[in-house]
Image (cartoon, rainbow, N blue to C red):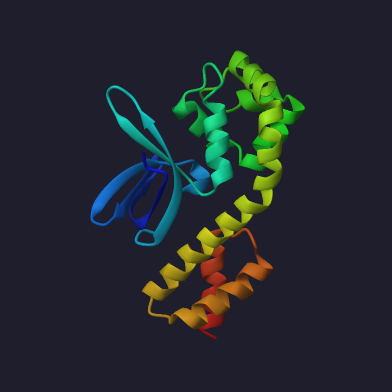
Length: 196
């Protein structure tokens, strides 16, 4: 059973990533929110291993809370791993928790693969279970995404030939002004600082 993977990002597309760990490329399905944008950076995922009679599939998440929410979602009748992944791609964890607390069936139904009955079951069965995860995840997910964004931006700038210390210093300044990115904006602003 694989619980965590840390390695070099080899490939990324709309459905997942391939992570090189010691020369072995692991295919990992991840929510859209966890997709790194720069090939070659080091990535670190909390893994859920799904074992079926015909396949072993890995699902990766930036935080433990996100992985726990994925596992809770798959306990609901009609929600398999692909649907749980679609839900976490469509709703960041804090928003998912708030949606379930409100019983917002319509919002859940706006996600591909989620019908009305499934949305109703999610709200009914997970109202208590997702409350805690959503509250604690708001901060941790923000930090995890922020750190991943920082690492992606640093790797891209260092690949352009800039030294690590000035890059980190510039990115800290950019992060203070624009905490949630996007990556392209961070790179543009950091380049202005590094190349006056």
